[in-house]
Structures are given as structure tokens and as C-alpha cells.
Length: 359
Image (cartoon, rainbow, N blue to C red):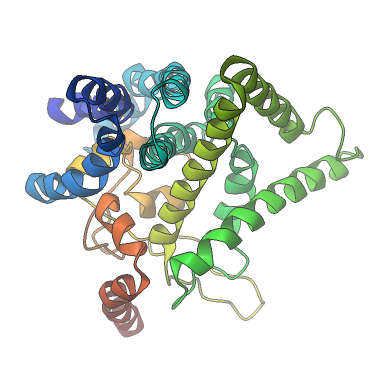
């Protein structure tokens, strides 16, 4: 791996750094209301421009070097480091929100900024960690998800989404013509319920009731309630409200990304009623270098679904996967406006389907 890419993954931590930067600039400039929106400006206006300027990274690791790259402790350490950074960012940001005297506009900007940062740092990094065999990494993933209250993702993503992706049974796979605003509330509700259902099924196979202490969602729920109570005791009712709201914003950020990753793609149903095996053809791919560094190569999502346990530095770019026209930062904004989303994605999806039909 080139040195620029190896150390470029440190850019992940530039995302949470936007929050203390915004607070500092707000205090220095005398415009804290305006600066509360700075992280969103950077992530959804400046980052897309920079993404286009930096360009593409279609290069894959040399096959002979993949085993050593996958074992390299540097890449594992970066994901584990996200745990203390996320909790420190969350605590500092909650305190700023309750003590900065922000008006309604500033409070909204700060909440949305904190939620998006949580979606990037907490949920995206947790996504990498919960797929690993190491108990430490799976624990770290659970701690990150609990910081935003979306801990059901740890169960549903592995045992639900990866099993049923690109089929009608998957709440995180948007079907053709479905707007984001129709998709989002259903994904949040169905995935939460499905996580509890899947965990209850696991325990039932062991002859245990769903309320048994081995239900890991009960443990994460207890931790989340303890965090919420701590925020309330420390910062009062407004601190508790902010803690809950930033979690909802982070969960929405995740599901918007899910919408982007699988929109309109379908696995064929076989004569026996089962669906074809998931391959790198069932997720949208993006090879933009900058946003891949910021997201631990989440945009190489096609390869992730084909090989879910692969570590992020060895995920592959597949040129024959369906390709997004831009990185996630750009597509996120586009998805918020369904007519624009459909106008961009439907011709691309039709072309992709025609290519597959011709094979």
C-alpha cells in the first residue's frame, strides 16, 4: 500500500475534529450560531468538491502483500482508537450544546453536525469492527454503536442485512422508485424490531427465553440507559435530549448510506425459491480516493458484501460492479431530493441492468 494511503486513513479523525473547531471558531468570531453548521458545510459542500479534485483510486493491493496487510496492527489500531475519540467527542459536544447559549438555529445545526459525525466515526467504524472474529473488536463495535443508541445494528446487520441484502426481506435495501423519505422511517423501525427478533431466535435455539442475560441487546440497552442517565445527571434535561437526538441523527445517517449502497439492485430468485448468492454485483461501488480514506473504504461496498470479513485495507475495487457517479458525500445530498436522485440514478440503473441482461 502506498504511504499516502496508509497514513491517509488518519483523515477519519479529522471528522470529529470539526466539532471542537466549530466551537472554537464560534467563540472567536462571535457567531456561534453560524459556526454550529460548519461541520455540515465541510462534509456536504467542501468535501464533495475536494473529492472530485482528488479523483479516483481504483488500485487494488498486490495479491502477494494482502496477508501481511490484513495482519498489520496499524489498521486495527485506527479502528479501536475510534472508541475513546467518539466518547470524548460526544461528551465535549454535549457540554458545548448545553452551555454555549445557542438559539434554535444553532442548536439544530449542532445536533445535526454531531449526529453526522457519529454516523461517520461511531457507526461506520463499528461496521468494520463487528465483522471481525476478535472479541475485543466486536466489543469496541458494540461500544461505538451504543454511544449513538443504534446497538441493534450489531445483530441485524450481520444476521439480517448480509443474509437478505438486495431482496424484499431486507429493510436496508431500497427498491426501485422508493424515495429516501419513504425508505428511512421504515428502515429504522424494521431493523430495530428485526434485531430483537433475531436475538430472540438465537436464544430460542439454545432453549432460552428472550429475556435471558445472554441476550446481548439487553446488555447494550442497559449501557445505553446508563449513558442517557449520566447525561441527564451531568447536563440536565437538555443534555439528555441532545444525547437522544444525536443518536437518532446518527442512525438516520447510517440508513441514508444504506439507501445509497443498494438502491434498486436485486438478487435473482432461483427456481427453488431461494435467492442467488450475494456477489460484488449487488452493491453500488465508488472509487473516489478521499471519501474512501474518510470512511475506511466503505465505498468499496461491493467487495465487502462478497467477502464480509475482509479488513478495510484489503477491500478490492471491482470495475464490473455497479458504479456510483460520485462519492457518498455527494450522493448523500442528492438522496435528500428524490427527483434529483431518480434523475441521476435511474438511467445509470437501466444501463447497468441492460449490461447484465446482455451477458
